[in-house]
Amino acid sequence: MKISATIITLNEESNIKAACESVAWADEVLVVDSNSTDATRELAEACGARVITNAWPGFGAQKQFAVEQAQHEWIFSLDADERVSDELRQSIEALRKKPDTEVADGYEIARRTYYQRRWIRGGGWYPDRQLRLFRKSKGHWKQRHIHESVAMDQGARVERLPGDLLHYTSQDAAHHHRMIGERYAPLGALQMFEEGRRTSVLGVASAGPAAFIRSLILKGGLRDGFAGFTIASFAAHHAFLKHLMLWEKQTADNTNKKPIL
Image 1 (cartoon, helix red, strand yellow):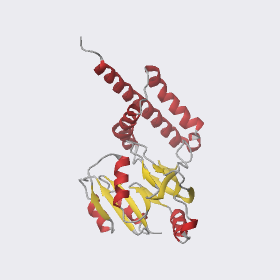
Image 2 (cartoon, one colour):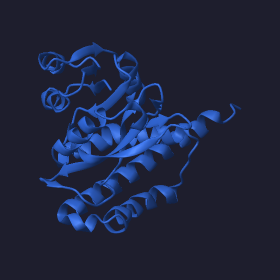
Image 3 (cartoon, one colour):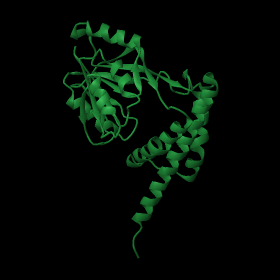
Image 4 (cartoon, one colour):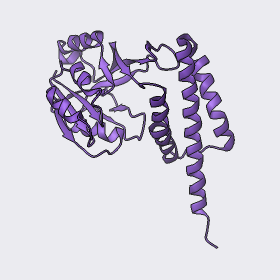
């Protein structure tokens, strides 16, 4: 069972060394970089990774490109701000010792996020299971703008692997705010628009409060104290901004479709 660990990057010099070291147990570490302007590629190569440059096609497409360039059948996909816990590494090593007939086609892994100097338990942030270890002949990354995930072929067997994937997310409040405004909300609105989803003024107005209540109360964000309140507040901001951007897109689309008199 040989494994290629794949990482996609863009200006990740602060993360890439730790990410590569986290998957040093893999038979190959492959970094696909989107023309970083910092030292990401050089640092990855210094860690022994094979580095390929590929212009940015979107999250799902870039991760699938990495899969296609990987040397081995088994893929372990890691984001640059994630690390493999000791328990997860031990689970993977134990899996590699099993006969192929006893091994599933894909494995879901719980992701634990570190935010405001604590590990988050609620708000829908844990266990946040991700399918990250899989046979590339049995699965592929969905071509989505955001919230990309692996789709397994019909009949493929998927199991859960003990151990957490450790996620070191937003550096601070300013970074969190910037990521929502520059990445998550615009891409989320675009994804919704392309899927044919539409909103309304009421939908825009209610999206934020609904997301806040869902994160803080329904998904147990209260367990995380002030961090849970912060996460719920940003969830509300994200939902409001995403629906507002969707409303803007559909309004502009309707205007463009009006007949010229």
